[in-house]
Length: 199
Figure 1: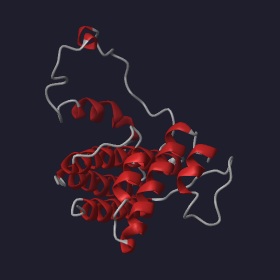
Figure 2 (figure 1 turned 135 degrees about the horizontal axis):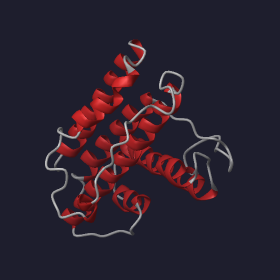
Figure 3 (figure 1 turned 30 degrees about the vertical axis):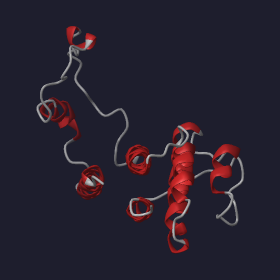
């Protein structure tokens, strides 16, 4: 199993935590330099696009970029958004790696990540069911953040119904902090390591 995707995700997590900490510590520095920093960022990945995007024919515009919201006053919102993006990306990686594990077994499952966890969980040593449940939880949390506007709904609750007590109720707001990202990653690594060895 190729773990490089998880390693890149982990490096990104560390870099973002480090960068947010430094930014906050320095009160986000010179906010008027945003435009130049954004233009510098254009050189970090080249070319701009590896295919002939229809958007390349349209100039970016000359408007100077400025912060519409003071990042020091909206730090918690920014942190929550970073967590949301990292959760979404981690589920994509989990989904791809479960496809590989299923393919290696000559098996298939439904299109949704939770159906793949369910299929791979069969035959998993009982000692590692916590990791499978952690993957279910990760998927449910992604669904709430991405499709439920940060509020638990019946579909997401159904995914975690068998192992979370007390269950969140439909309409409850979901909060997850950075420490949960480390827990989700651990559950995912453990689960995928175990299912890749199950015959």
